[in-house]
Image (cartoon, rainbow, N blue to C red; front, side, top):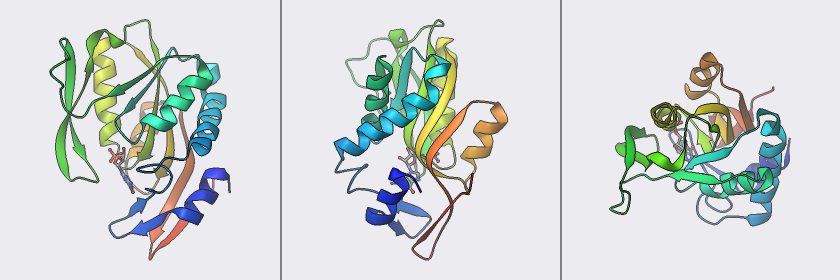
Length: 190
Ligand code: 5GP
C-alpha cells in the first residue's frame, strides 16, 4: 500500500452506492502535506511526457493538480462547473455528475490553451469517466494534445478506466480500487 491508500484506509469512509467519502483530507478539509506528496508522485510519473499545462476541474481536483503543476513548473488551469459572467470567450461541454446525479456545463476560456499545449489532466476521482469525456471534448476544441491522465482515486470497477485505456492515453492512479463493498475497500493489484 502506498501513502494515499494508507490514508484512505485510515480516514476514508465507504458510503452506500459505491461512494468513498474523503472529506477529511481531500474533498472538503485538505491536507497540504498529502497534496504535496501527491503532486510529487504525479510529476515523477508524467514528467517524461513533457506537459506544458496541468488541467483539472473545480473543486476537488484543484489541490492535487496545483501541487502537480508546482512540481512540474507549469501553469494550472481548472475548468468551471458553471459559466461565469467574467468569461468572454468560453468553450463548454455538458457533463453528467456521478455524485450529484445531474448535468452541468463544464467550461473554460478558449485562449487558456492552444494547439501547442501538451496537457496533463489530474483529478480527485475517476468513476464512469463522464468528467473525463468533458475534458477530452474541451481539449479537442482547442487543438491541444492530452499527454496523460492522473487520478488520486480510481474506482476501477466503473467504466472510466476502460474508456481511457481504449483511447490509448497514459493513465496512472495512486489508489486504484477493485471493489467497494460492505464498508470495505479492496485494492486493485497492478
Ligand atoms: P466520473 O465523471 O468519472 O463518473 O466521476 C468523477 C467525478 O465524480 C469526480 O471528479 C468526483 O467529483 C466524483 N466522484 C465519483 N465517484 C466518487 C466517490 O466515490 N466519492 C467522491 N467523493 N466523489 C466521487
